[in-house]
Length: 196
Length: 75
Image (cartoon, rainbow over all chains, first blue to last red):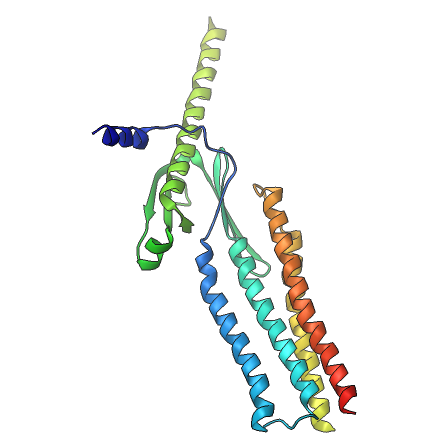
């Protein structure tokens, strides 16, 4: 019974002292699994083909051996570059929570960026979605931030431990709104003070 | 001789295109600076970029050097 009461207290606590701005979120590394697997398979196929071509006699050795080495090296270079490109797209797709706004910064294509900023004071709702076997196994999910502004909805995709992250975002929203109320109250007091 | 020339031309075309592509990615990572990014985050990106350059560069250079060495050995 004591443990239940203690856990309820922890759930209801609004201790926001652990918020260190800016909070940076990016997609779970599992998003690199598919490009990694494809790159790995391509690498294996390349090396296998390079070994198989001379063994089967399709390419005469030793005359064409230098060309096999050249092309194998080049194809491996291309595979590594493609994987790094996927990594760069993953790394630069971030969501940044500052003290007063949420920033969605995305590298859409090479030489094509997209940036969206939402004022924390306009956030109405923060919710989580974790659906599927992989998200539940690797603890990642989507966070949906509903805004009163023109932007409408902002989705943070494949965030690690989304419930904790959503909680931090909700605390940041609360802090921003409280700060807004405080500054409005202080301004009203100053106005009434000057009238007197 | 014509086939060898064709193979070399194809190799050079693919090499130039892939070097330009890799160069664009390197340029992006080096110049990427957005409001809200901490310097540590940018440094991590640049460290990974250095790792990519080392691995990819070693692979490419070693294949070229290996091909040259083997062509002399064959002769």
